[in-house]
Amino acid sequence: MGFKIAIGSDHAAFEVKERIKKRLAELGHEVEDFTKVKDGMGDYPDVAHPVAAAVAAGTYDRAVLLCGTGLGMSYAANRHPGIRASLCLTVEYAKLARGHNDANILVMPGRVSPVDPHGKILEAWLDAPFSGDERHRRRIWNIDHPEGK
Ligand code: RB5
Image (cartoon, rainbow, N blue to C red; front, top):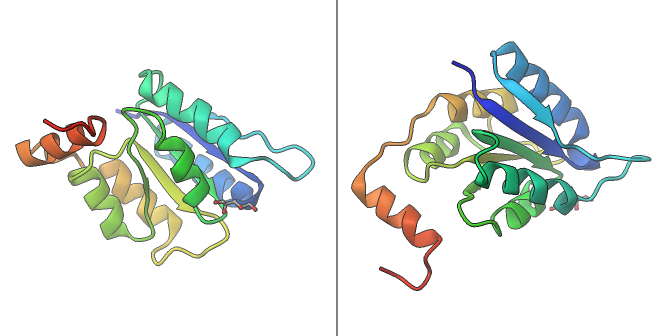
């Protein structure tokens, strides 16, 4: 069964975002694009915040965000409680982000070349389940509870 996925980029990753969006649709996922690029420019927080808020609210199962480096999108999305936005440059990062961190947002760069192809990282992240291990659950809980246990 497909996921309901939000996607968004700034201007620096627009073309890569278009390719990822197409691939997600081919894989049978329902995709909504939050990109707001006008006259060749779109600020990454303007996309990251509504996408992260919608994922945190449960409107989407997951999201994919892209900017030049992937860093700006990560900083903004991770300000939202319940969001674990993971910048992944390899398939191994994508698998571990899912398996250990239950990452609900995949972030990739548009201007910097990831080590593995974008499509391989995307598919690894879509396919990898969260391990569900108690130790990983405890650590994930602690991310949103800095005051501790
Ligand atoms: C835009 O020029 C660029 O700063 C942005 O895409 C991203 O790389 C920021 O983290």
